[in-house]
Length: 257
Image (cartoon, rainbow, N blue to C red; front, side, top):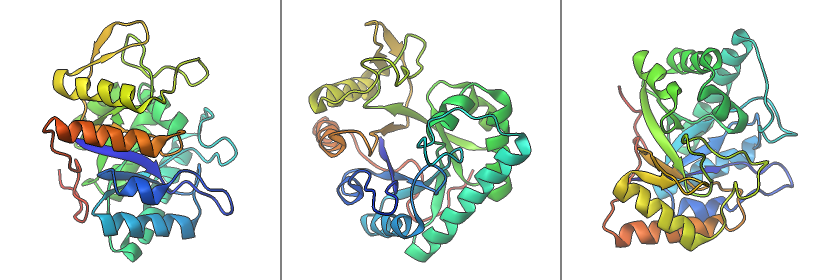
């Protein structure tokens, strides 16, 4: 199983999360590309730390929304969205090369992530952008979403993602952050939920219903309160259960279809 976190999101004098601590725990890092968060110097440091820890790197592409942290819905044209994603992947590839590592996958962020899980037009635009940059990149997306099937149909490798610190609806979607209980904070609860998911392929929705969910990677958001404690406890529980932790995509080699 892979553990991932959203990192490289600090901006100038504003610090977001504890990248150094998370990089000692996770196996993959979704690194901001400057559109929703992150500045070049901070991103480069995160990439160097990822390389030093043998952590795989993904491009955490987003809508151009620094003020809203990439969590506001947008409706760019296909021409704009394809170019935006290409631009972000390319920028991170350059920084990663300087840091001695590679970008091996793409994970959209925030509102873009949630939109393309089901919006066919924007989803196809993101797929097109990845294919035009490097068809060997892996696309990470919400487990069970139509996006992953559409990407596979066009020849992309995909990775299904579950969220350790987020609540789920009965249909396997993430509960809106605007609703109470959408974000989980208890390390023991989070670790228990994810261990059950890995062992049974099921997660408990907010209604109490058990939902089938196949995941290649588990995310702990780096900006969540107590993120490091949650990620550390999750890693401990999985390892104690004999579950091997490793990146779903190579840390230093470009992924191949």
